[in-house]
Amino acid sequence: MSPSPDEPQIQRTVISSETAVMTSPAPTPLAFRQALGQFATGVTVITVEYEPGKIHGMTANAFASVSLDPLLILVCVDHRAHMLPYLVEQKRFGVAVLKEHQQAIAEFFAQPGQNEDIEDRLNIRFRHSHSGIPMLEDTLARLTCRVAASYVSGDHTIFLGEVGTVEISEGQPLLFFRGRYGQIGSSI
Image (tube, rainbow, N blue to C red):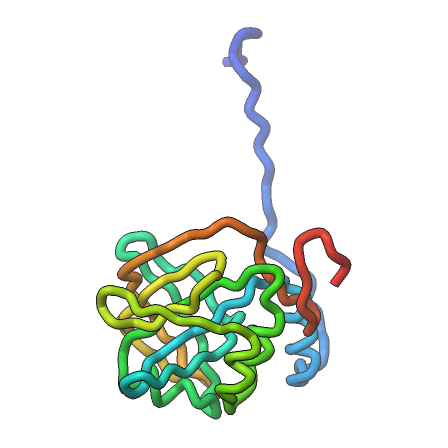
């Protein structure tokens, strides 16, 4: 029975499961890093109060949303990072999404040791959420999180954070692409 002229025609496509086998050498860590550098990311700073009045921050672009129900994010922390034992011990942290003009702040928190004099010169300011989590001020977005789970994988630990609060501000994001910082519309 053929379809009437008023009925839409359905085209069927057959997809073959046969594919050509590609051979390539095993990727080196450098090639892997360069390939992933092609993925532009935003830049965040993770913050933890590791003892009363002492806040440590870490720049991270290995950050992503995971779930809307419940609200979950993830951040990956290198096993050599000073942040790792603080997150394991404190089990709560802040996340700040940096604005386009905050490259110096990203570079500051990318260093393992953080000098209070430089922090003052950069005018880095924190405030605490109602639950006592330190949050970097004057950023594009701020989240407070509690560690919901962590997974050791390779040379990093993946922390799942259950989001407690969210604040959003105006502005444009700081980007990271091919190992360099930039802004939307710039050639990075």
